Length: 335
Ligand code: P6P
Image 1 (cartoon, rainbow, N blue to C red):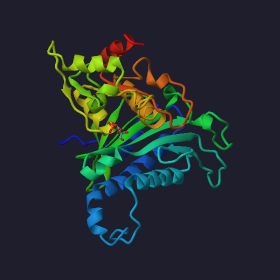
Image 2: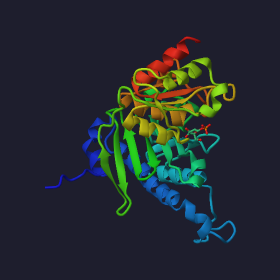
Image 3: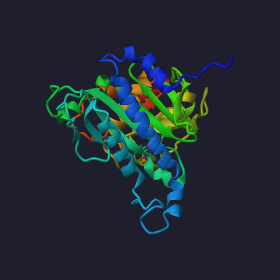
Image 4: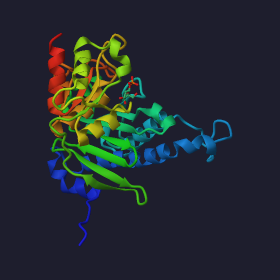
């Protein structure tokens, strides 16, 4: 008797009680993201064909204006979230400022804000490398019924109520947490249904993969340089393997399954690093910690950083706990 694999919808209903706020809202939030993910997946999967199909100037075969995929992904996620009547504000990498959402009949009664990187690593699309969407969800801190303010978005990562990513890779997966572990769902594109394929995902305590753009080596802090040399040294279980896709979601997803560490440090080129705290590092950190991993800025916990700006950048060390601790020990020598 073949075991029936649970769908995302069934999983959400079964675990609704774990979502510490009122019933049904998690379902609406995740369902909105699920729908947008399927739409974006469809666009990403045909990206290579658009130029061929849309040969006539800047319009595609449907006569639509061709849009850059990250702009399109941004619009799809914002529109889908707006339509579900539970989100009162959205911040996006593609939007300079946050978007306040007035619900039509219930003026600002919605309780959640969503921060999103609609299509992280989109420059990889042209070379057919996997990309991802990253989302982070908070409960608003200002009075329900009033328009959202920046304060609702500048919350430390420890206040997240849910976070996750969609990875548009050899298969499309939705991986998310509500603070009770991490679960991965794989899309069956034939029927448009996500199935629970990776229950209770866990980072291996250590690993043999390090992910960093070594092209920037000469610009790295000495602690990072020392850690890279440590990874390459012939000793014990080393040398480690270097794997860097250039897509945060893909590198972290692989390291969560196989064990490893992803590092995007500050450097003389980027004094705060490149990755954004609110819609890249905090959600990936929430997932990492829920999967038994660690996420640090090289010195302290990412999720305890108090944000000061919507698009602020932070250095990011994320992965197997023993590997992050080892990297932090090198950073501490030069703190
Ligand atoms: P670099 C993509 O632009 C991204 O934000 C992450 O997904 C990725 O890990 C990183 O930047 C790649 O940056 O400077 O190594 O090309």
